[in-house]
Amino acid sequence: MDIEVIDRKSEGVERRLKVSVSASLVADAKERATKRVAGQVRLPGFRPGKAPAGVVKKKFADEIQAEALESLMRDAYQSVLESEKLEPVTQPHAHDVKFEEGQPLTFELHCEVKPVIELARLSGFKVKRNSNVVTDQMVTDQIGELRDQRATWTPVEEKPREGDMVTVQLAVADATGVIPEGKEYRIVLGSGQAIAAIEEVVMELAPGGSIERPVKWPDDFPDPEQAGKSKQVRVALSDVKRKALPALDDVLARELGDFDSLDALTKGVREDLEAQALREADAAVRTSLVDEIIGANQFDVPPTWVRELVSHYAEAYRIPPEEQEKFATEFRSMAERQVRRDLILETIATREKLAAEEKDVDAKVAEMAAKRGADAGQVYSALQKAGRLREIERGITEDRVFEFLLAQNSVEQA
Image (cartoon, rainbow, N blue to C red; front, top):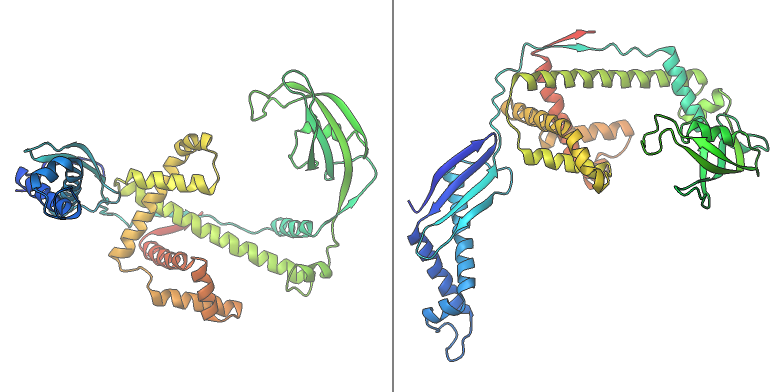
């Protein structure tokens, strides 16, 4: 055979194939490359395309060699994919290339292939569903947060207390004991924005006052170089503002939304919390069910996909370059689970013909538009512009897959 695989090594989804291209095919490729180069170059004393092949080969040996090699590698790659029935999920790489005069071309092709996912067991699992009860206290706390968002801050001319917002100039001595010029910070006392010892110093001051004294950093401070150490600090208090909450009444309810009264607001908040609790319970059931399926159906995943997902999250979380290696180590197992989950859902959707189609996406968009009282075409255009149609399609597919799985498995109330 002109192109053949003479050795194969497999490890998980990784493939290493030693490929040989016959010397005759190599010679043909070099001849074609020579003719093409000869037809393009101009040599003194010869009309275009009429230079002797021997002269062209000698003068443009590197160009001919490179073109022939590229052509042979491309053809060999396509031939190997077909003969070995490979579905690469990453760009293959060639290693240990040997391309010598009069000899066959040999190289080792490395690639990762799409894993074979059997999913022999999808039923017979038992998962628990948590009872996420919405209490009166949860409703009260949520209304308190909404009320807090409407709070106003009023300047006061007195020493601050916990809950006040202060503006301070803070400076900490360096390793030599020198205190530099202070930096301005806005802090809500008691919120954990500053260490407790510094907040205590701030609460000794009245607006316009300043103080300098040693402050001990907590023993459990995240930076071990500073934990438990005492440093000289200078604090100057510029101003103090105190929070004033709006009255908890019907007026506040109307300001917070389409509510006629405080009772209507309370009812709406409870309904929202109950809907959220339902979504969280559903998500937890899905997570447990996927974990059961992963445990019962082992398969390899492409390492490149895992690395790409880790990289994506590192970018999304804006992880600094110097911390990315540590982040990758800590996040890798989570990323691998995510890849496994996606492959399982994709496999089931394909096997059971559950994947969403264009008409399903159109129907979902129309439903969304109806709830908003908006034009479906405009909503579709906005979602398309925002790149969210694929997200909707994936959501429909996943809902169908989980509906299929839940019908075959048991969900017990915890």
